[in-house]
Length: 243
Ligand code: 6PG
Image (cartoon, rainbow, N blue to C red):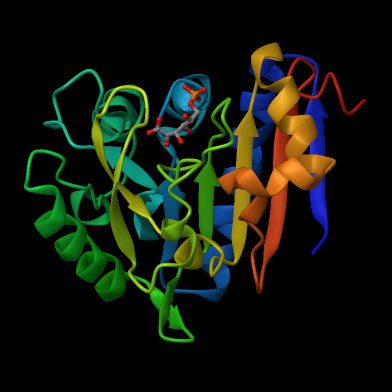
């Protein structure tokens, strides 16, 4: 599977370019399908991108058939500063013409095991299926310094091959419970985009994109869309060791 690696001078240039790429993707996909299904990442990296979506694309009508999901969510209420939904909602979802029915948040305030089951059904009921698994049109991911993605952490690799659609994870440092898409659902997507910025990610980018024997310990190394395309949007800081 070939990766398409795009490198940008700054996080701002990356965010602007990816926002434009996303709007083109939504427009093109919307011509072929009645709905466009997209899973968002959490963490800090996408904040700039979310703000640019609100700044530049709030008025577009292209949002009408978009369904937003999350790749993972912290098990906290939606108004908690840690909430991935809360971050996306405040930065852009509440500012664009996307119908409320198109926002499929993970209810972090609920019991994690029950919510993982409920959210699995919500994904199944609102996405296409391929090989008995949900097939999202696009999954946007971040990358942790330890090689985790979504909330699939090193040492907990069973979530990569789980038969489930969503699983419950525990952050190895904070002990925070998380709900995450499993690796098989992620790899069943038509398109996967990693958004990675910052020099602090350079080492893990090198280890994932120029694999060594140790790379298999990184969950992100196991992200390879079986039927689709993989894109890396990197800034120069994150790409420093592969340039
Ligand atoms: C989360 C994310 C997680 C994140 C990486 C990178 O819920 O935190 O889904 O996988 O994308 O940890 O986080 P930063 O963008 O903050 O570096």
